[in-house]
Image (cartoon, rainbow, N blue to C red; front, side):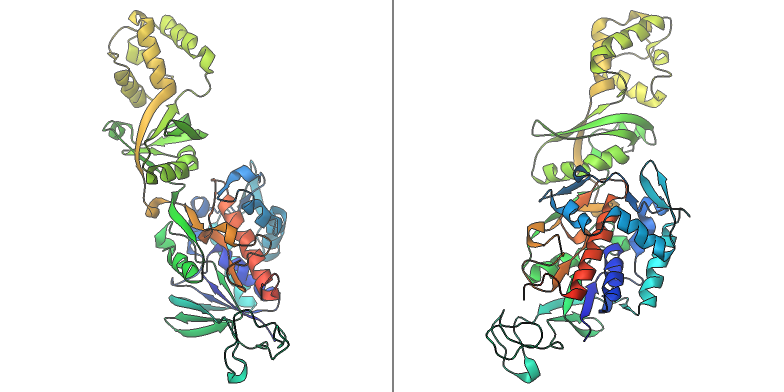
Amino acid sequence: MKRKIIIIGGGASGLVAAICGAREGACVTIVEHMDRVGKKILSTGNGRCNMTNLDMRPECYRCGQPAFPMKVLEGFTVEQTLEFFRELGIETRSRGGYIYPASDQASAVLDVLRREVERLGVVVLTGCEVREVSAVDGCRPDGAEKRKAGDCRPGGVGKNGGEGCGPTAPRFVVKTSQGDLTADAVILAAGSKAAPNTGSDGSGYELAKGLGHKVIKPLPALVQLRCQGRHYKQLAGIRTEARLSLYAGGSLLAEDTGELQLTDYGLSGIPTFQISRFAARALDAGQKVTVRVDFLPSWPEHEAFERLRERVSRLGYKTAEEMMVGLLNRKLAAVLLQAAGIDPSQPAGGLRNKQISRLLEQLKSYQALVMSVNPFANAQVCCGGVDTRQVDPATMESRCRPNLYLAGEILDVDGICGGYNLQFAWSSGAVAGRNAARGCGSQE
């Protein structure tokens, strides 16, 4: 008989899990509490869907078990992902290794996934809340008395030679707002707490806890940083190349270079997102967090002073403010001159070495004191989630509960910007779906 699989969550990982499970011959049901599946896919890549990345390295992922993400990707590689979507009709294009659908439409990716789910006969229950997942620890064959946990084997034979639970005995009961469902296997793909407007409300964490899993505290990641200071209102809207170095407790935790976006409350842009998960963790631990901003990352440290002094000398007939024109955004330059204690109307030629040094410090080592990260509503993903030590990366099966599988953002895995989080969703979903359908790796 076909194995019955219930997938809790109809996001990226849940949809791929459903397709892969159904292709293996399983009877699959997706339970999604939003009014439609895959909403979060539509917002990825600014609506263009950065599907994956050709530059796939371990350091692109953050996880309590650093080797875990890449082991999962071995089970469904980038190349297999591209072929999977090509078979569904998605042609792709590469922008420096960043992979997008040729149409530049995230909706195209969701459309082909939904169509394949429909073609394979997967049942999709939308607007359906999961209230509880109960595991049937023993067997009740034909109404017989429940046996001890672990005393069952597939095929109707018990561990001690007695009658087993048989192929139709359910292993899980899933209580929902639309009635109770039974299954041979459950895949938890309920997402994280990031971007709750797309359906990620954190409910999957409680289901995982109820089934014996440890959840590492989820915090916002790939998110903006809120910093101390009123001057940020003057800087709102400025974009500039910069190198960001994040410090907490006196230690350097992370660095990244790219286009920094300044907001009325602090820092945004891709380099900010890349370091934000470390800020979130440090702030949650009660540490003082600062970001050193280098607004001239192309100027080597050992040359910077002489380059700035030469500029001052060459443009000495201008005011300090005019001397900065062409080097930095005018509004940003005004704030940095003030921070260095330099009168913008002062003749540049009159600047002493001490003043040049103070200005250089602001240009190369501006200090932003981080007060908080933005909330889950602004985050693209979370750091934290189900402890990956309790999940087999080769099958995505729980080490705590046989026939329970986990996939996607519910796990303690977060990638950097660039398609890495979607790739983990595709890979973990595919591995979970296939193995749940086959019953591979189960500890029963």
